[in-house]
Amino acid sequence: MRTEEGGPPAAAVTVRDLEEADLDNGFLEALEALAPVGLTAAQARAVYRARPPDLHTYVAVCRGRVVGTASLLVEPKFIHAGGRVGHVEDVAVSRQAQARGAGTALVRHAVEQARRYGCYKVILESSDALAGFYERLGFRRHSLSLRLDLK
Ligand SMILES: CC(C)(COP(=O)(O)OP(=O)(O)OC[C@H]1O[C@@H](n2cnc3c(N)ncnc32)[C@H](O)[C@@H]1OP(=O)(O)O)[C@@H](O)C(=O)NCCC(=O)NCCS
Image (cartoon, rainbow, N blue to C red; front, side, top):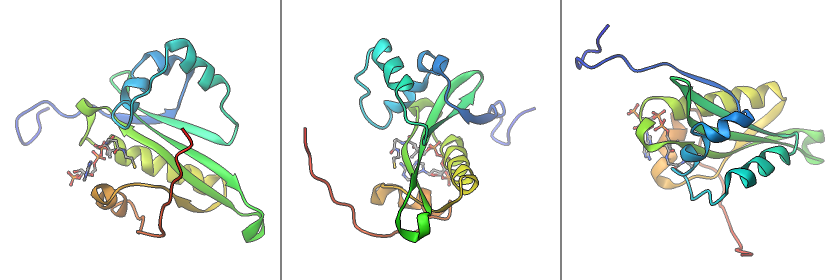
């Protein structure tokens, strides 16, 4: 089968939970599209093993290799009658795999999981340049983000 442009069809992307073996199979490279990782393999394994149970990390896999990732932190609140908020963090797709739907599949999956965990909303921080990407997925601009650097 060929695409309309005459090239080979794009390989399917599947999204699943992060596994320890993914650390050596494209996961850290995908994160580099967002920010420098700066961990040795051993340090990355220690971070993986110390993650809290409410932090869920998903990976997009294409041809057996991780090409992207997104995380969902589920926060139980005292306000809103103990409601839960889903925080989407660290959405990244490796440069070579961008613009093929992996980012969309990852964010959709994180939102579906947030719904399954009973979250009443999902929030994330992004930039003006990427607002359109998230608006296409149902997000709207909201609130102001502030930051205090401690290191
Ligand atoms: C943003 C990012 C996750 C999108 O992933 P992706 O797999 O490339 O996205 P998709 O293929 O699902 O793209 C869906 C649409 O969003 C658009 N889009 C992707 N990246 C974009 C960007 N940086 N700015 C504006 N639009 C963008 C695409 O053009 C595409 O639209 P189209 O189908 O009309 O062409 C990816 O580009 C990335 O990792 N960027 C660097 C890290 C980053 O900025 N992460 C987001 C932190 S909030």
